[in-house]
Image 1 (cartoon, rainbow, N blue to C red):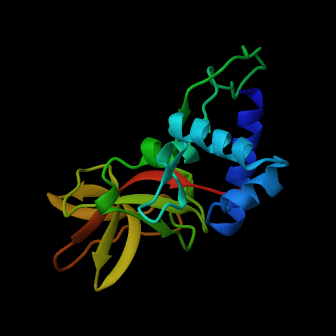
Image 2: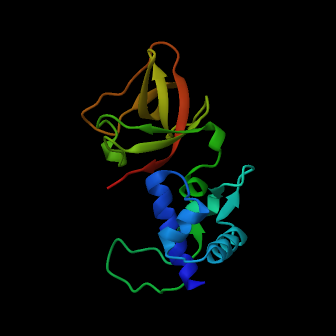
Image 3: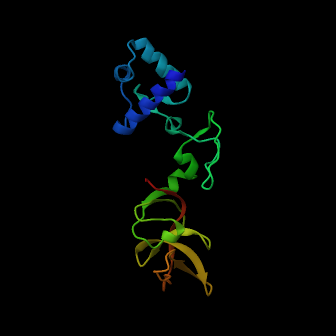
Length: 191
């Protein structure tokens, strides 16, 4: 079973490069398995573990669990160093962690620096749940004068305004109707 973990990571790397799983014969070559029965046994174990499934046309396909990544048992301190206990940790997918409603969730790339004081930088991807309403304090994607903007929703004199999280930018006080496209529920940044 220890080898299965290394075989699985090799298949995950292959999938990341090619966006498809290799054929049965290619799995043998990729993983150094000499016999078809070894490949079939591995695939059966990975199916049983919920990592792979067969499509109606009998091709291999990854399951959601295939994309799960290990979650460390203990958080890492951002302050003084602290020992971390080893061991098997649970796994989760980014979708499971960030996306509650997949059919109404989009990723939007941020352009500009008006939200840097909220830790949102140019090039980040914000995870936005599309919905027409929000509450004061939410970071929203709003439509103002047919243009989209990412700002914090606030109230001023009983009316909603959009506030930047950068002192260099003035609040947006829509003269007409303020339309909410969605509410930010997460952030993805590749370092």
